[in-house]
Image (cartoon, rainbow over the protein chains, first blue to last red):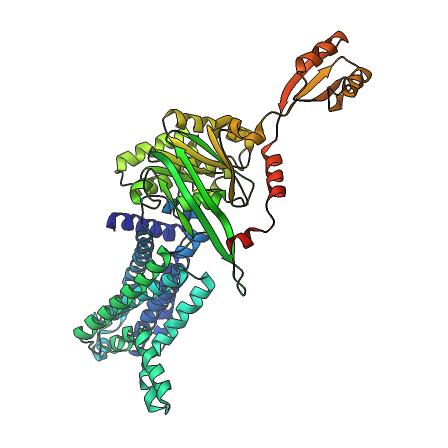
Length: 270
Length: 321
């Protein structure tokens, strides 16, 4: 496995997303955020910053999710469908390098997206900070430019990396529509995953409890990555929690990518 | 060492969802292609030509049998470094320009930036892509994409080139250019393996051919050695003689058929047992003139039709099961 080859494929994916105007979403994001801040600014003082923080983090997460899912499912499928895969696999590149390169390229696109969205987010918050009367500012429980928001963004990024991996995995063997449904389905389930663990309190049947327990451990626990509420209210998130959750994400990702590579390596491109 | 060899190469697909049945896309193909040969791989559509090429590119995996390119198994990166492949109706990343595409592929071979620029520019010149090289490929016509496809197949100065239907979809000029290119490659010592369903392409270029029908090898060797393509008669086109004279020739059994082509021109079909010189000499005494003489032989199409008619009962489904 050579990182040079993976890097080349990744750069090409990034180029594709730029040329296919994926980054236009950043403009939509910025406009949305700025427009919201003006509108909400007309409402209650003190609450507006909190609402913008909520909105901004949610938007970063949703925009990222849409990119991860809808580009992720097409990464490999499009190459197979349009038959560009025939030529590239005849070059000195191994199939796993191709898949990992595709993955790395989308993560690169997502990272650039998230970084730019975060910068725009802080820009809007900074403007709100300066425009607010210092007397009102003093009453804020948390500063508008609270760096804790970055912790939430970091975990969003890890979550998006995992979502991308899952989308890529499904796309190695199923149609884009099915891949999108499965990926989004897992994402939704993953956010309510914690409920599965508590099924023993509401269920009497032992097999059902075991099944719920099993699913809890097998399905990705996306709710763990969601620390948006803590970040907005300025509550501390333990560094240990961030490290552990990230490690969980990376481990799960390694498993998903391993599966994607294994499926792809055995596939016939008819 | 053979440039390409296959032994009992077989690929069966499963078709049908509720009642899956095997389908023999390729059955027991054994071939050897020597270094420096131009080898024609012929057959009607659906004969298994593309399946064979995909097996050789490791895009699909064989059900049984094996293949070697330059003495190594397909899919080996060392093999990939030494071969070029043009798929049928190639499609490339349409958001890239022709230059960027070749640059990208060049980087997979590990060439440095200067080397990539040199190769890209030289190859695009060679295949006749001029100022268009800075346009995104989505703006390219089919013929231009084929040229880009050829350029990418030759990017690494390959020792063996695989071309899947390289002439399909090209205008006569384009076809002639491809023929010239194949001959140039041969002169450089490159082995060329190309598939086609047009016999004339093979006749003009190949040292040897293999003919595939229904997933099976039905003939291989030099075209002149394949019995089906032996001359089985002559076609004389003459002018200056009247129909009654020609009728007499036919009545004597010296011509199988007389066809009027134009007012004054007739085509005579002679069996191989009749010397065309004698018929001509006789017609000359009646004022006849020779317009043209052509050997009659089966076309690839005739051959295919006969092969299919002669095929044992039972389709490719039964064979696979």
